[in-house]
Amino acid sequence: MSSEVVTRFAPSPTGYLHIGGARTALFNWLYARGRGGKFLLRIEDTDRERSTPEATAAILKGMDWLGLNHDGEVISQFDRADRHAEVALQLLAKGKAYKCFSTQEEIQAFRDAAQAEKRSTLFRSPWRDADPASHPDAPYVVRIKAPLDGATVIHDQVQGDVTIRNDQLDDMILLRSDGTPVYMLAVVVDDHDMGVTHVIRGDDHLNNAARQMMIYTAMGWTVPIWAHIPLIHGPDGKKLSKRHGALGVEEYQAMGYPAAGMRNYLTRLGWSHGDDEFFTDAQAKDWFDLPGIGKSPARLDFKKLENLCGQHLAITEDAALLQELLAYRDVTDQPKLPENKLLQLQEALPFLKTSAKTFPQLLEKAEFALTERPISPDEKAAKNLDDVSRGILKELTPHLQNASWSRDDLEGAANQFAEAKGIKFGKLAGPLRAALAGRSVTPSVFDMMLVLGREESIARLTDAAA
Image 1 (cartoon, rainbow, N blue to C red):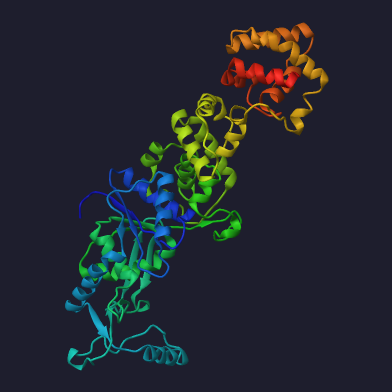
Image 2: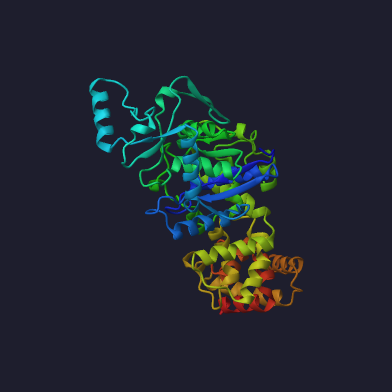
């Protein structure tokens, strides 16, 4: 085996990309990327009734949004069925597997008798050591010969050493009677053929590892390094389900969380590096390691997610942020922005991004730049536009109009005016917010004026004072 690290994400395309699956993909991506290795994607689409092309597309879209790029082509497990069957036949030829002709009725009768006699109900096939000359001309399955004594030890990077007694392992079916391979065989053959060195997956697969190791051992293949990660629970400590809210990655995108914040949060969910909460992708790739993964389930915490997203918005470059903001508007079916509004939004980003945690919050603060005249003030803002306030705006407007439209000049003109009137600047701020944005909570009035420009700002003030 080469020393290059190869990880994989292998989802079943039966629905959207679940948040737990997204974190598994992220851990595999970080582990490979941090070591200059490969991160592969395999779609486990052998369940033909439940697998759909739409679900595969949803998984790819979710990974794309999260920025988890994979190496090489997407591999379809179903397309490799012939190769899986070939390995089962090789095991048969080596005497490591056997043909079992037991019918469903016979297996059930065995189990019923075992139960009545309080013996293990693990099926022991009478065909395991039968002479091939005694084989009937009848349908059969191919079973692996499980070790009968001793123990199998799963050396797990997260769970530690997990020991399973071999007398608890049955002779697992490899090929069904119609010649199709089972999932457990397909996974091992695919991981081996793809050169996967580290299998990082949910701990609901931990018991599968012991059964999969039988195939690795029988074929003389190198067993990969295992890391079975605990599942994600809801804030109440129960297994994540619909009642906890969003489950699919695309729902988080539609809720307006930036991808970088989501990556940071999901990385930190069940893994830690000292006390670090906020970190960049580069730091995550550098720091991420399997011993840092906790043994107990992590709990989803939307408040923490929001706080991290806010910190990521603040440090994202404006051009990249604008692209992601527009993608968010697209997925939430918001109208395309005209060129002039786009430019104003871009200009406003430096001060908008430092006080928002999600895209809806950012767009709410950007409303002053996205709206058109005439401005309709909301209920709270309208209270700041009584007769007295309108009179003040009427007097103030010419002073601002004559200023040189730089921040210092605009602030100077407003402060001088307030001083001359014997009022505090705060008395001007409410009416200015209402006139410029139609809201009572907005960015700084001077930031808004600079983005809107002289003509638009004066027009809004004049409208409000009328």
